[in-house]
Image (cartoon, rainbow, N blue to C red; front, side, top):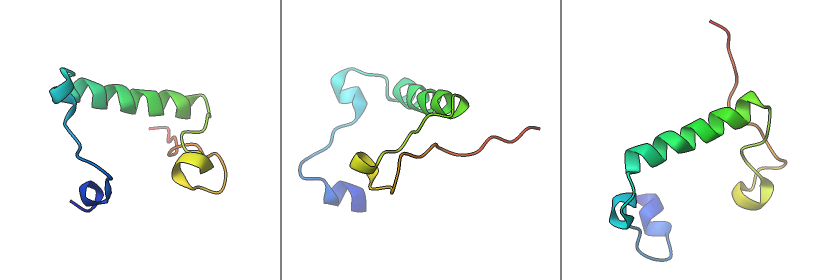
Length: 62
């Protein structure tokens, strides 16, 4: 609710555009995982306000 209230306009679910929201979410997480595996940043100062480009998460061997 707080994020929705902070938006400058209305937000619609992906399905309203004819997209599969579950598939879109899976693709987003796969994209972030691939960037992590390649040690590429997933967050940037211009988009998130972080101090420098940063990778997402950590890898742990089982």
